[in-house]
Amino acid sequence: MTSKTVSMPHRVPAQTRFRFLVIAILAMAFALVAPVTVLAQPASLAPLAEKISPSVVNITTSTTVSRRTGPQGIVPEGSPFEDFFRDRNNGPEGAPRRSSALGSGFVISEDGYVVTNNHVIEGADEILIEFFDGGELVAEVMGTDPNTDIALLKVETNEPLPFVSFGDSDSSRVGDWVIAMGNPLGQGFSVSAGIVSARNRELSGRYDDYIQTDAAINRGNSGGPLFNMDGEVIGVNTAILSPTGGSIGLGFSMASNVVTRVVDQLQEFGETRRGWLGVQIQDVTEDMAEAMGLASTDGAAVNGVLEGPALDAGIEIGDVIISFDGRDVEDTRGLVRQVGNTPVGEAVRVVVRRGDETKTLLVTLGRREEAEGATPAVAQAPQEDAPTSAEMMGLTLMVLTDELREQLGAKPETEGLAVMEVDEASEAFEKGLRSGDVITEAGQKKVTSIADLETRVEEAKDAGRKSLLLLVRRAGDPRFVALSLAE
Image 1 (cartoon, rainbow, N blue to C red):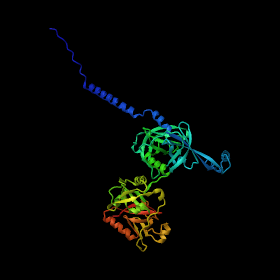
Image 2: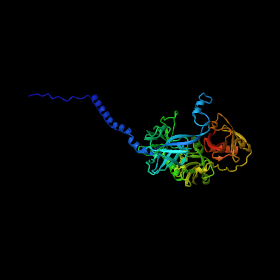
Image 3: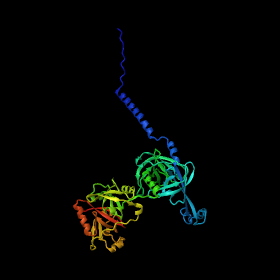
Image 4: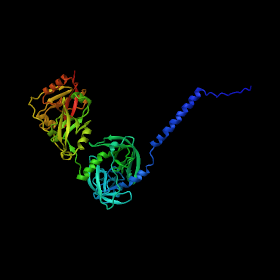
């Protein structure tokens, strides 16, 4: 009988099999991640740039200015180079000269409407638009809005112009790719790319809503468009933050959802027409919320009511506006934008928190541009009390007299308690109260005497409050301050 030797398969050690398994898993992971990494990298932007470039324009402005009588700002007065620079300053001293400036813009309609920044064309005698194909046309200013730094221009042409449309800036996300186009440093048409770095930035204006981007923006880019990847304008390049004057990746574009409303009004009226409520407001702080018995800091506290819509509708000092036209109010900035974006003359429901109650008031909005200089509502005549003084909450107080009103520059109808001294170690000093301030309300009620203030303190303590809300006026400007109550 012939015997056969049967070879058994070699058994792979468990440790080796584990290594093979790990390698296989890593290979599969790499295979899955690689396509994602490729997708995360932007494809060439050339097709998009070619599509939208014809709608972007360079803007050159000319302005007549008086010639300076020397080289101010170039060399120090008395410098040996002073005569040299004066000789190079052609023309007699004081004679007018022409000054030029550069910027960017973009066409928004085939019949020649162009959007740019107000600061690009402000004060210009002549505005020249240079198109991507090299053609040039003179532009006319149709309207401007310094509050958002937007200007609308118009050129006359017999040929339809290539134009771009606005996109929805609210749908842009941090991290989305964007393209900035314009005329940086006067070098001509240029494209830069980056991402949306942040949204809802506020710089200085009450209607600010900037998109922050790291796409390179330099001088000369002002007024140019910020595009999304669909070729829609989601912002107007307006400003940069830079210690050197050049781009360091902190550029700001006014959001298109702000710009479109402004442009529509400039096209229709040649000016802006924003809604106006007629109140002075401030944000609600944590200590103010506690002093007022509020559950949160949402809303806008009314610290002044002007002659106008709010007064007519019954809004009072001390009210906290928590809803406007069906939308919750988070803070003063949000309320200002909501009111400004509402048509003039429209009747809207305003919900306020007043003490422990919630009230809904119907307010017919006025027009902000016509309301500049509106005066505060005249206070009700207070009871006459003999002048007295007291020290409370780190403050030395005295009831206002005619002599004190004159010293403080207060209006004759102003009533309240004058702050004569503030203890520098007190909470009142820390929160900004100073000698010369006038306290007109405490606990959201008027105070015309020391007894009134003492009553408000006791009322707050009886209600279990840890602080008392004061309405303080300085040179007529009101603000709320919450001071802690001593145990």
